[in-house]
Image: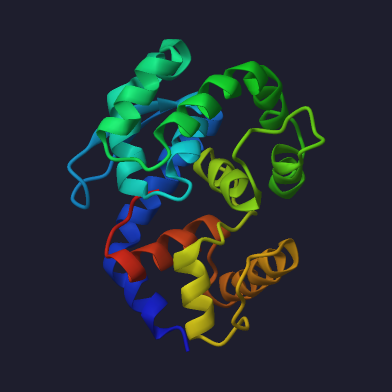
Length: 224
């Protein structure tokens, strides 16, 4: 049933392992260097705040666009550029929601100290995810739902959360592991995460690794 995943593992396992190590370094050292070659001719340095901003930018957009913006804005730019400058750069890349994303990045600066303390705590990824996406939480990041919070946590080294995006949903539907649905509710998200956990168990993968392999199957790229 999962021959496609086995083929993906055979094809790109070294690149997936590399990406996971880049994520882990970001969590342990607070900074990492990404090398997306040969899938995208981009290398960049990222800290935890710039990774949070990447996840804000990528929502309802693409990983490739988010990576290009992350490189251009840079670690310092995410912390210091004003709203107009951020909007101009994001808009230049063709992002549909440039102003909104710039506003969310500026707003994220206000809560980041609390967010950083949270991700450095002993809480699990799932516990942290709920706090980052809960509108009533002091840790809430504007624009973060379950998917975006999971994306951020995976990218800073957490292995226990699934990024249930359009690629993953399509994959699970094709395998008839979840039913067709019009909207992604919390219940459906968590059900999908459970199905992914079952695949992980069968193939001895983490959620972080499985997501990268599914993304590769759907796009022929190992990004983030």
